[in-house]
Length: 115
Image 1 (cartoon, one colour):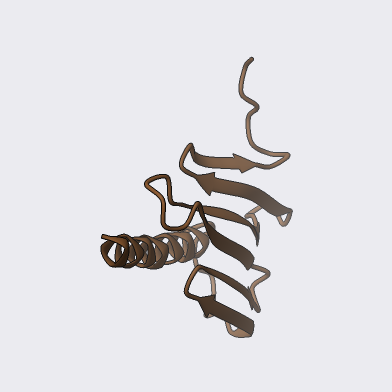
Image 2 (cartoon, rainbow, N blue to C red):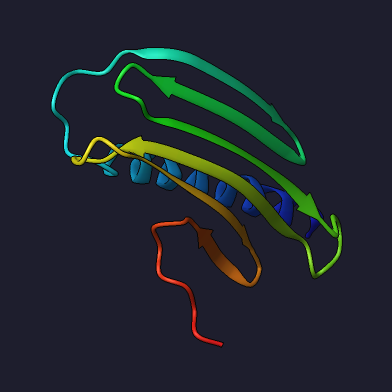
């Protein structure tokens, strides 16, 4: 069962990374073909981290780590941020965490939850 759980965790990790990259690509409408200026990636059995920066002002950094490995509460915890230049010329940054409790974005331009 541990092997199946690790395979499932790795599959979830890959899906999460791909979804995150798609979100970054959709943050602003394409106005020109951007060039990748920097891309770093380190994928390990129980975690990963990557960062990418493009010529159009976008950047994305993220790292994920498995927690409670080998237990029935095994989960991945992800922390990251992405930035993009809006149509108004302002740079917007979103910091986020994602874990067994969901996706939690924060940004000065995002509405705050009412307590």
